[in-house]
Image 1: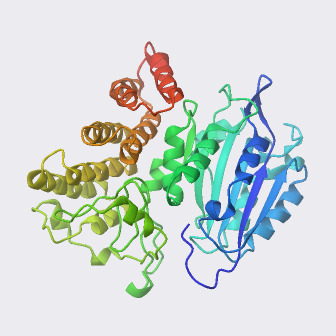
Image 2 (image 1 turned 45 degrees about the horizontal axis):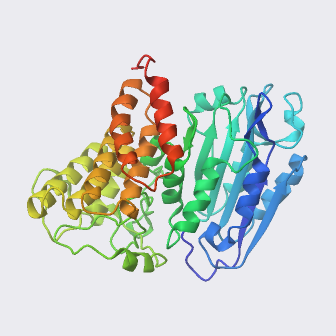
Image 3 (image 1 turned 180 degrees about the vertical axis):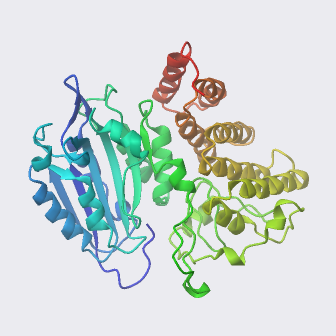
Length: 449
C-alpha cells in the first residue's frame, strides 16, 4: 500500500492468532509465535506509512463475536489497514462455509466458536481500494482443503490486497516456531534498504520459504494476470481507474513511478539508474497511468524506437489479459537491446526479467522459471554472488518453480535451478535441501499432463 494525502490521519494493524494447526500432534502452524515475531516489527514498516497507528493483538480469543468487534473497529480506520491472520482454516460441514478456527474450535463447534471467512470480506469490502492489505499464513484442515481446491483461491473483497500461503493438511510442519513464510516476510522488511511493496515482499518471501508441495499461494497467477472488472458504462477518461500496479521484481513500471529494488528495466539508450538513487525515491507519489497514452500495438511487429518507453503499454496489455501481445513487445525490445548493447548487457538482461515476469503473470511458470534462472546465471557473470539482483533472480526462479505441477517440468527446470542456487554461497542451505528433496520425491513419480 502506498499511502498519500493529508486526509488519512490514522492507520491500524490487526494481528489475529487463530487455533494451532496440528498434524498427528505435531504443530504445523504456530499462530502465537507468528504474532510475537510480527509484534516487534515497527508498525511503520508493516503499514508502509509513518502516520500514527493503532495495533490490536488477538491471541487466544474464543468468541467469534469478539473477533468481529475488533475487525469492525479496524475496518473503520480512515487510513491504511493491515490484517494478519494465522492459524487453521476449517469448514462448517453443515453449510460448507470456510471459517478461521479460534482457540478451542472443534469439528462439532465450528458454527459457534470459529470466525466465518465471509465476515472478513463483509467488513473490509466497504473500504476504499488501496488502503487494505490482508496477510495470511494458514494451514487448511482435511475438511477445508477440498473446498479450497474447488474455489482455486480464497474468497476476498475486491478492494483488498491479499497475500499469503495456505498449506495443505498433510505437511509435517515446523513446530512451535515462526512459520517460514512469515519469517521471510519479516526478514525482507528488515534487510531491504527501503520498504519494498507488498507484492514484492510476498514474492520474495514465498520464493524463499520452504513451502510444502501443493501449498496455495495467494494471489494466484490467474488473479495476478486477470484484468480489472469493467464497469457497466465506461467512465470518462479523467475518471478511468489506473491499471493495477504490479511491484514484482522487476516491475513493469509507469512513467514517473518510483522503482523499488531490484533495479527495474529501463528504455534502450537510457543510462542505468543507481540502485541507491532509486531507493531514495521509493516513497514518492505514483501518478495514475492510462493505457490510452501508451504506444500503439504496432510496437509488437515493428522495430521499437529508442525514445519511447514501452513499459506502460506492456503493463496495460498484461493487466488486461493480452499476454501474447505483451510478450511479443517485450521480446522485440529485448532483441533491440541485444543488438545495441550485447546479449549479456544489463539492458538486455533487464528485458529478459520483464519477459520472466510476463510469463509468471500469464501462468507459464515453466518459461518464467527458465528465464529467471537464465537471468541469475547471466548476472553472475558480471556481478558478485551476493548482489541483490542475483538473489532476486534466484528468488524469482525458485518461486515460479514451486508453482510447477507437472513432474517432468519440475525435474527439467529443477536441475538448472539447483546449479544456480549452488553458485550462491550466501543462500541458506535449507533452500537447497528443499529443492533437492522435491526433486528426489519426483524422481520416480509419474508425470501429470
